Image (cartoon, rainbow, N blue to C red; front, side, top):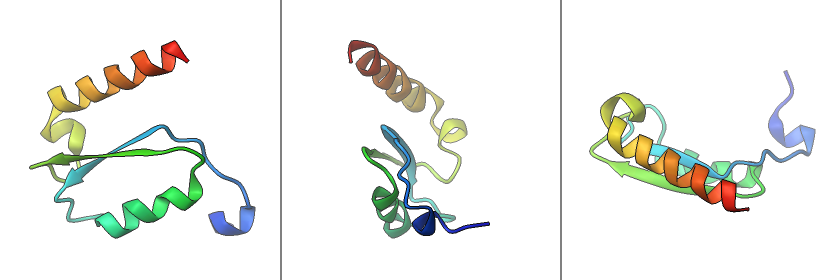
Length: 74
């Protein structure tokens, strides 16, 4: 499998929801993902672990709905 850097392509991501603190993936790794994306909005959800949708479903649902409403206007 090729490394993403060798593919010379970028993934278009609008929003990335990340738990804070996430014991599995640290902030440095998440912030490094910006180099693989044409657009990215990183949202840190406090008091949430690695499984943000399970830990904070109301917050995640609200952010997803906000994203979809913005995407619908574009």
